[in-house]
Image (cartoon, rainbow, N blue to C red):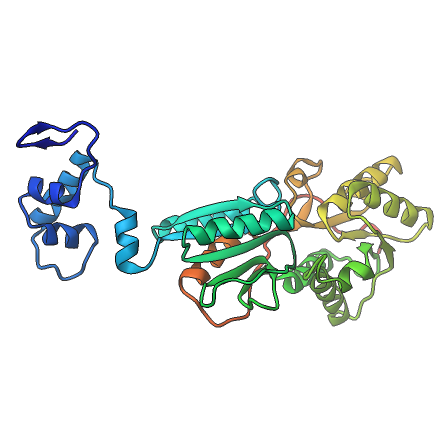
Amino acid sequence: MIKTDGGEMPGKRATLADVARLAGLSTTAASMILNDRPDTRLSQAAHDRVHAAAQALGYRPNVAARSLRTDKTHTIGFISDHVATTRFASGLIQGAIESAEAADHVLLVLETGGEPARESAAIGAVLDRQVDGIVFASMRARELVVPDLPAGLPVVMLNATSPRHLTSVLPDETLGGRVAVRSLIERGHRDGIALIGQNDEVERDAFRSVTVSRRVAGVRDELAAHGLTFLAEESVWLWEPEGGYAATTGLLERDLPITALLCMNDRLAFGAYQALADAGLSVPGDVSVIGFDNDEVAAYLRPGLTTMALPHIPMGRRAVELLLHPAEAGEHLIEMPLVKRSSIAEPRIA
């Protein structure tokens, strides 16, 4: 409630004039202080009185009025396919929220499930709210088809690309592939490394993935830099544990001198662990294993799986930063950290 000369006025929202009156200053002076205007030439005591008055009255700025003055709503649209409804990529939202809050913006998150009708409704919803820009995000790094949008509206693609909107944030999969191979070579693995998950079709289809081909390129480039090739390669159509199990079982049946398995994602590695265990082999005593993505289960395997993590939180942060402070259009790559656990050791086979 606000105390006025006429008594209490239940339910009335505190205004800037109320704050100024309680602080004993003009409305202009109170506005300058609350908006952190530099060089106000007002004393620290005046600043303290205004902030104390605002707190006492429960004052909140009128966002609608501010939007009319600045032509900004301080609201960002975040439209995704399955990011909000899956734990796997939810870090993209967490990072975006962190950057938005740091810049005094609100993130309006809408999920489409990959359905065109829901996507159109989501776009309409954020445009109706006159957002300052839109982040389009995808659970899997792939190319998206983005409908027509008003000219001049800032757009950033997150874990995605679009030929119509060239500013994108992606994991640096090429470097990640190189680091994964290097981590095996540094422990002494050279001629006994096998690949689980080779898939030419996925590598060529940008609508399925724009980064798998880069992951593979980084892996092969690092091997070539050391004068090495894979001992064997197992193709897997679906990167799930059953595929990793079948591929690893097939390799073991060939009785090859395998010292390490490089799995194209962690879920393949989960299946590889089981196949090795069923064959009476230990990780990493008999065979070392490394994966990609840092699936949450990777830390709970025994031994824990060493893997290249997808940097979802810093990716989300960077997308909002680019939206609010545009940089040169193009891809902005975020380094994939190596998460070291206990699945890599020196090979027993010389």
